[in-house]
Length: 360
Length: 125
Image (cartoon, rainbow over all chains, first blue to last red; front, side, top):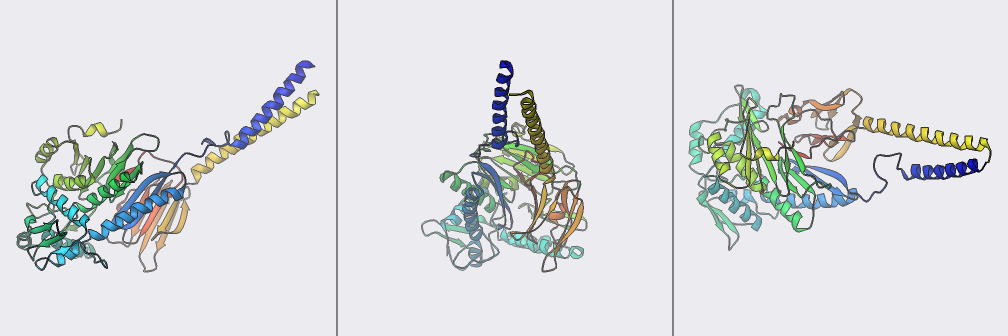
């Protein structure tokens, strides 16, 4: 009997524990009952830089994350309006205002425009002229033909070389006169115009991430139309993992490679698979080689891994316009710069240390 | 305490255990089933479809433009669209939580909510 009594007491205690455990959710769910952990959230915006913006972050509540994402969006919209070459915004002098006043007068602009243009000039020197924001006159011709060709595929045409050559007479970046003291920019050649397509997105991405860092934010991944920049790591301390899109859209494999990025690292790809038009069955992409004035076509895509998003954006364009040998030499001679070239047949070529970023 | 009391207690224990395990399994199955393809137009949710039901839906916009969404075998894809860039049609099918297909001209986003997670945080395009 004594033995029975002890057993029943034990059973009752067990039962109580059991009920408490079930109520506490220890057995019913996979997650622990403690809910102070931060949850992962993402936000997508479609109205910035004519592309898609994705923000990945963490918050104790969704509101906490949304607040952060809205702050970032506000900054991005600010840069979007400043760096726009097609639209006017009330009360703002932007790149379009500078273009509209080419040969007319210097335009007073926000210091962030001055910063972008100085950076763009640096990139011009850095890449030996392969990234030239003063190439607007040539790029706008291609833009027109591409728009028309996309809307009327059966009547798509290529611009005449003579037309392009005439325009290329007005692409001297030294005619872009920056007056830092008075915050003005003046294009001294009335026929020239700025097209910041190869630097603005990356530069804005970097500025916004710098802003986040200065304001104590952490664990953020920003993708501005594929210009990807990481701040810190995932909340669990592991690296953010980025997939690189397969330029072959007919392949069953969505991604051609994956890379893990460390704090502050940036990835971007340039390729012929997203913005292009087709003339007589041949694809013509939006990246125009300053030497030939025609779309580059050696590679399907080039991806760049480096520590600054603006640089990443400019250099992926530059490498896309170079031969493999030139590009490899360029990458090897610069610190913190790695690249992957993808040919149209899917062949991948890595720079020396690129593979160190590929997860095992 | 009688022998019957013990039998009662044991029975309660067993029943609770079965109930908890059953609930657990039911929840798990439910999570796998709950992956949804959510269609968002210009920031507003338009519709959401379970990934476990094969179907083809035409998303029609007021101005006459459209995207055709196909769900089959747990994957969502846009098979046809009125937009001129066709980026959404060229996009790969999506399945994992958080993946999206975006049609910029039509301001249409198809996003997977819930379901399986993959190991990728972002992607270049």
